[in-house]
Length: 114
Length: 116
Image (cartoon, rainbow over all chains, first blue to last red; front, side, top):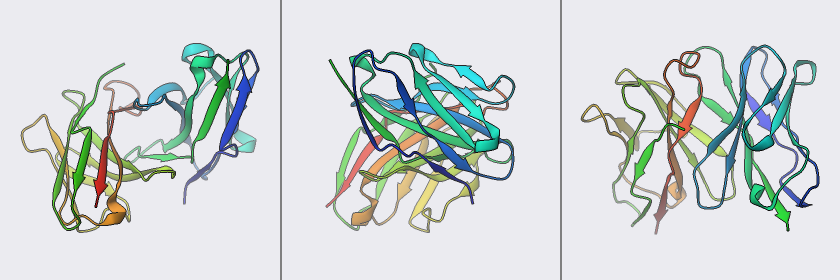
């Protein structure tokens, strides 16, 4: 069965620090990969996605993620976080056929201190 | 970002009562999804709905749950007899057309269901 692991449940950083959130998935076939962000009181918003091609993808708000197929990983990075990045971050995978349902990780709650 | 809307934002109900959660997905799309998130847990897939039929459902989606598209625009999730453990945030999602067969899902703001 598919599964997604996010190793960091809570992360606290100071502004301008660099961020890397881990995401690993378990699935034998081809997958689509996503990072979503949920700001306090708001809905899930797409940060970035990977379908194929260049494994380094850039998203909104200065975020990027790198797909490493051999490690089944899709880690999210940002060189310099801001207080406004305080939110919960979810990694998700979907298959490339069938219903394209998402399997989510448990989420990482990021707090950025001003 | 395409907008998916959900009503109500918060629903409080007594155990054993029926609830209907409503979603207005991105128009003219055929694929719809419901997910739920119990407080402190991960977002879980419930059901996908394609062309007016359930295309896949999870183990969570038992006989107490049903989905409908009653009028061609709204998309509803019904829980027939709510249990305490149904308390969760319920998200509707809809893909954006033309994007790799509608792979990228856009989520509504969610309905927080509280069962007392």
